Length: 119
Image (cartoon, rainbow, N blue to C red; front, top):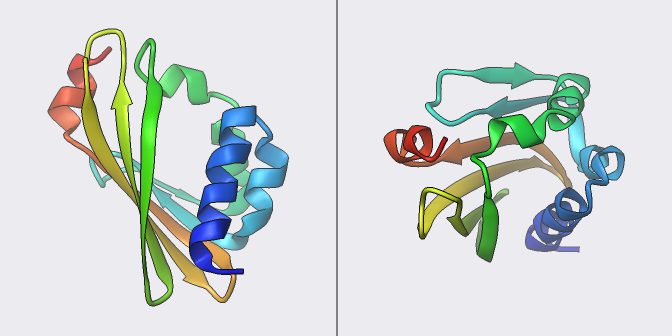
């Protein structure tokens, strides 16, 4: 299985709210770097717990309208087209770094000022 398929599968699990299955593709000591690049979650269990409050950290009306993927050596970048109640259309990217076939790092890149204004 290529790395892009693992990431695509993860987006599908996220969309279904199947967080327990989603986190199985992450290593125990994974890190998640949130928008702004200053907040960091460490460990698969902490990441799993954060997913329970996903609705409160996304802007009202948040919807992913398209996803594209770019795969490199040991990493995949997802480019998301998204919209929300206050943002008609925008993009963000998410970097997934792998150790073998498990995600060890997930890092979100977005326009933090636009993101804040979407709330």
